[in-house]
Amino acid sequence: MSDPVTALNGATFNAGIASVAEVPLQGMITLRGDLSAAAIQKAATVTIPGDMPTAGRARIEGENGVAWMSPDEALVLCPYADVSAVLEKMQKTLGNSRALAVDVSDARASFRISGPHAREVLAKLCPVDLSPAVFTSGMFRRTRMAQVPAAIWLSDTDCLQVISFRSQAQYVFDLLVVAAQPGSSVDLY
Amino acid sequence: MLILTCPVCGVTAEETEFHGGGEAHLKRHGPGSSDENFEEYLFMRENPRGVHFERWRHVYGCGKWFHAARCTTTLEVFGTYPAQTYEPPKDLLAKISKKRPGWAWRDLA
Image (cartoon, rainbow over all chains, first blue to last red; front, top):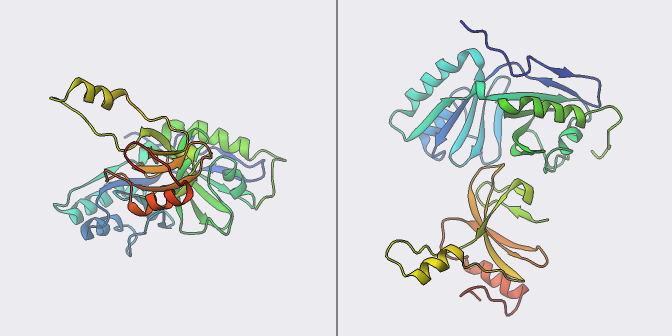
């Protein structure tokens, strides 16, 4: 059996205004289909029972969750080892609905930026208003991070999580490290 | 810099999160059309100073196409509306008329 590893083998950077760490392997399933349909909503929330989040929002608790990506796409989070079991459960829930559920865990890299300046680090890279009054817990924002796409959410106070493509992991990590370098705080938020 | 609001996901962001898709509301002239019509469909574009209608795509966000009405001189965005339409909504046209009296764009005014 192969031994799955993350793109950067858990790289961390703690010497700056915020700490940047690559998140251990996280199970991710892309679900495409009409998100207003009941069967698809049920399949999307299979790891975290409850309502489907509305546009631009997510419900994420620990390694489980669901995020709204677009009107026809949801991202389902689950522990890495459970992906095939969750996929099977989703396929059963979907039945004959017109939908697609695919394991994309190994196509992604994710990072955690924590510390009092975490918002500032990301605000330097994304065209998003990250002030505490605007970007609040429960929001899930797909955006541009310097030159690559990324999705961000607030996993805790002063802790932001970022998902990017795995092939761009080194680029994203380097970006975050430069944005978090010592003495670079703007003290905007 | 343009500040656009995606009518699909409701996100308001500046233009680097989007990608321009050229002029809006082109009528496709396909097989069987005259050479003039096909030429017009392929090459003839408006290049106005003032009110303009464009297609945009929320490329770093939800990935969906939409329409935007904006002013090419002031970069003011009058409004955005869904892609699934052949013409701009009436209330948007009224809003533009109020701000830019006497404007014209192709057969709209």
